[in-house]
Image (cartoon, rainbow, N blue to C red; front, top):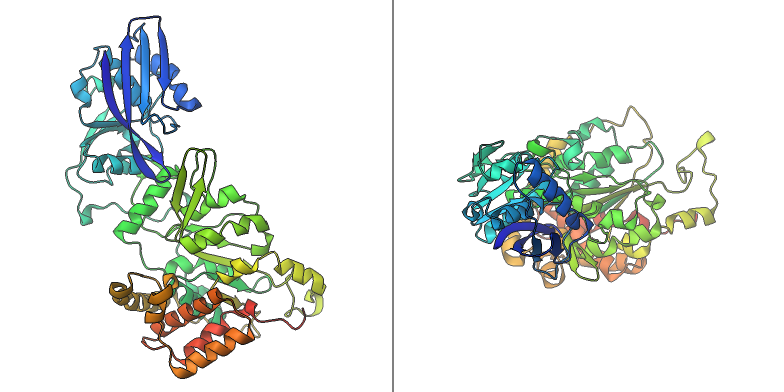
Length: 519
């Protein structure tokens, strides 16, 4: 007898419908799974066999063929266990096939028949809804995550017996409508999305120029780098960036939540729509695959986990150069493209790159005195800074020195996070108003004619920009990024035309472009 069950897989960060076809025929007892299964899928035969017997059903002693369609797509993971078991029971007449009509089945089976949660449920259910599927049968622990997709009938199952009687050992949850007021929002949990507790810029004494630079970077979504000796507050400043970023919209929140679902970062029944912007801080020993994703079946890396948030690389020159170089394409295209023999996958990676570094290996070049005098030779300093390639540095708009305060008493608190957020929202409103003409939200994403149309300079500003281009030996990319940065500075001051003072401030934010006499 033949039957077909609907299941799903994850391709990149998107769901993909998989048809699980089961055929039982006379012959020697044997189970064959076809359709490019990986080891975990092939091992499902033993899990399904034990689960079926331990739940009081009969496992057919016949020839069983399981096809996972489309057959040319490699299948991995344990999410097909429940669908395969349901197909075997339906094809052998132990469960009525009508039970699974227009239903998506996803879940891993334990040997005793318990149904365990799997990762990536959110994009699977979203894709099922697009395909016209109206019901979902899945592990009880995945109900909260699946309920984020509205207008779906969800049935939580605790064990395989629930396939015969929904209330045998599980619970049922009906979702008929999803309204904006009903969206569940995650309270801050560092373990879930990497977001640190709320921190205030008012806690950082002094560093007013650095605060203004960070405000500008966040307002236009520009990449930034802070350079200065140890203990001047570089890390403290960057850790407070999420507190001045606009909240995630519903669409952005769903995108981020899907990524964390695929990455297995959800906390079971506590899954909620992520509203906090991600803040990822990988260690400098990370590999290229860990940073942008990879593997035989590619999975999201730190760049994708930072989507719509911040990717913080502390002590930038300590990262391997070949690891940093893989960021060049994501910073331009705002996505990560990974090619494998059977598939080319794209992962979203629209993030603010925030970096910090010391000016030299010992950290005290140009600022130390007494016991903290720099002992590095010019060659060592040059080699240290050359770990960051010119093309990568070109993609960082805001490069600011963070010096040691001259006087602790004169430091002062300066702007708080609330004040800075208010100014960021004003700048964003101006960018949103231009979106109808350019189709671009953030100034950092302006290119070509959209940039020329938006960034209008007066005569003096144009002259200063030309002089900076010649004197600093800027590339055309750096020239355009100065223009974008000036556009953001003007937006913060609520001015439409870019003036000479805006260009001058933008030039001050390119400290690493300026030559150091000591080198």
